[in-house]
Amino acid sequence: MNTTTLKTPVPTRPSSAQYDAFHTARARTDLVARMYAAAMGADYPSEIDASSSCDWPLLGLITSRLSMRPGQLLVDAGCGTGGIGLWLARALALRLDGFDLSPVAVTQATARRPHFLGNNTTRATFRVADLQNTSLPTSAAHGIVCIDALGRAKDRDQAVAELARVLAPGGRLVMTRSLRRDAIPTWAEQAEAAGLILEHVDERRSEPGMWERLYRLWITHADELRRELGDAPARSMLAEAEQMLPALPGRRAVLLTLRRPATAHDQAVPADRMATPDRHGGRHTPDERTPQ
Image (cartoon, rainbow, N blue to C red; front, side):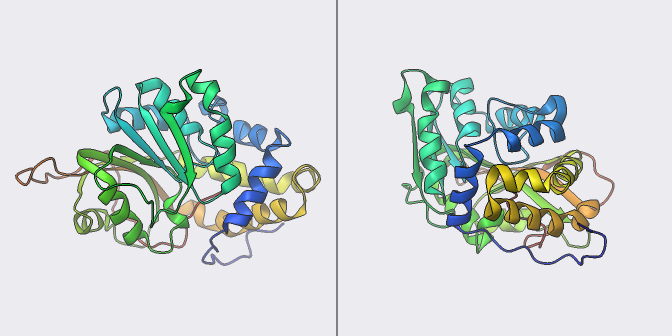
């Protein structure tokens, strides 16, 4: 497929049925996992087996930024098959509530609990819910992680506000964002509108290159994807690769840490930012989406 002739369109948001089909197909074969492993190299966390940009450096950074204590509640928003949240729950001795659009992913995540938590499976629950309507109690979570999931929300401001509602005072929302170079960053404004403080902006400079390697693997092995996964999931993945490849050279990827003030006197301070050569980004960019 020729990606050089394509304009950069606004990607469509996959439906829950499309995610169900993808997760069902992926469970039948290790082909997709092998492609992620090839794209990430030594940074691929095979145990997590996530369909996202989550690698070992990101896991370490998330662990540090959450600053959670044993026994506290972590919410994995857009959890997929649960690997990220379960790994964090085990590593930090946390309780976990994960939710996702896909009932198939939720079923698979539930089945993975014994691998990470042994007999303590009641520490983790998974259910079907939406980023804009989590059905979680107000101030219930001590920490929230949202990895490559915000792009599936119809209204990202509303989704961030909903996650902020769920966050307990002093708790942190750690989320990935992907931005384009010709837009103005609005992270602080979005955080403030949701009652949060932008605490850290961590650059993920290797993320666009990982997606480029993965997408090119998908295109190169298109026939194998169709044979192993079936036509519909393969077609969705290949369409994503064709849409996203032209945007990757101008892509900026970050991890944001947003904190809910502990008290009314908890004042915002300038966000800690890793060095970056220029300011670029945006709140509603067409390349900020949820890859397969």
